[in-house]
Structures are given as C-alpha cells and as structure tokens.
Image 1 (cartoon, rainbow, N blue to C red):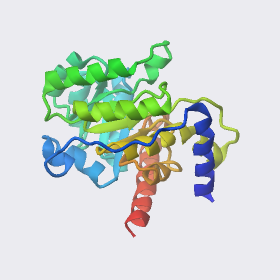
Image 2 (cartoon, rainbow, N blue to C red; image 1 turned 90 degrees about the vertical axis):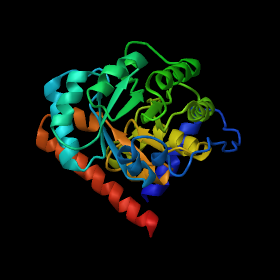
Image 3 (cartoon, rainbow, N blue to C red; image 1 turned 30 degrees about the vertical axis):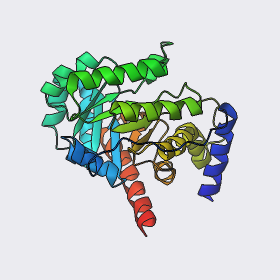
Length: 285
C-alpha cells in the first residue's frame, strides 16, 4: 500500500519537470570500490553498503549547544555521518563527542581548509536551504565551478559530496550530476523543494513532502556510477522509499535538529536507522 502511494507521489512530481531523456550512464573509471579511491574508506563504505545515514545540523547553524545535541544524537542513534557548519571550533567540538565521522558544509571552497585541518572527515558543497530563504539560487555552472575549485584546493583524496539544486528542472539535475561525477564528486546529494503542499497529514503527507527528492534520486541514481544520497523531507517513513528509489543513503536535517530535547533527537535518529535496516534486509533477501 505504501509503495502505491509512493509511485503516485512520484507521478505528481512529473508535472513540475519535463520528460527525462534516456541517459546512458557514463561513469568515471575508478580502481575498485569508490571508498578505495580516496582516503576516506570509513566514511564512504556505508554508501557502498546502502546504509549511509547523515544527520544535518545546518550549513548556517553556528549554535554550539544545538550542534552538540545533534552530534550526540547522531552518535547514539546509529548515524554513519554528521554534517555541520564549516567552522573549525564546531569540528573540534563534534570530534570530541563521539566517533561518527564529521562532514562540513559550505559554498565557499576556501573555507574548507581550516575545517579539514581541525579534523573534518568529509566536505559538502550544498545544503542550500538557508540561501533559498534569502532568494539566492545556484546555477549548474556555479555548482560545477565550486566543485572544480574544491578539488583544486583539497586534492582528490578528500571525500566530497555535492548537492544538486532542486531549483533546476529534473533533466538538468541529471545532467549536472553527471558533470559533477566527471569533476570528481564522490557523492551526489539530492534535495527537494515544495512545489505543492501535502494534501493530507500522516503517512501520505510525509510521502508527498519527500516526493521531489525521491524523484530526483530515482532519476540521478540511474545516470551516475557514484552513490546518491536523498535529503530534504526524509523521515522514518520515507527513508526506506529513498533506498528503494536508488539512494545509497539519506540525509536528515529538520526532522532531527528542530526537536527540542536530546532524547527526542536520539529517538528520531534511531527510528530512521531501524527503518533503513529493515529495508536493507528486504533488499538483500
């Protein structure tokens, strides 16, 4: 029953994007698994196993108390990665709180240097939500240029995730993802806007909210050879659907970082982790 609603939700998204052309997957040749090609096997291995769970505190969230709560929840709830603002002090804080690898997000490649020196395990060009609220958008050319610049600064061994903006039509998202793979990205992160309000609450509303990022994940994961991570609107209900759509993992932000207690955050992370584990068991069976 859930799968039927999921398919209906993806169909509704197609009204907001042109029909996709048929893509031939042209991937960058790598020696063995993705994780063996970089100095971050511990970080990228969960993606290859299709169980990556990234908890996101927010690109412009410099509230140390909230970041601390999010990082603790990631460590205690079963996350495989925590994504925080690109700040050396926050990196040191996050590293002191547990063993979950730390990713830093920014749209300024030069800012990554200090964060990596402080111990960041991965970098992310993306999590654009706060910029959209200011009316700022990102063109394919800008995202690609930022990716190339990041590679120039950090080299090709630092794990790099890049978000494809949801503001692009779906076919342009796919084309950009393919370009980003060729430019050296290791992970493609999808995101979803809200072209429509959910028509209902409960499970149906949660699925409708995640439909744009699930649609992007389904399209992009078919066109690239590197892992795809679904983010925006992901919950315990929709995380398994993301895996079914082709995601190697999910990124979860406001469903965790907006909660008002550490216990609630830990419980929410654990619920998503368990939902993904159940889906992986079904897939492997």
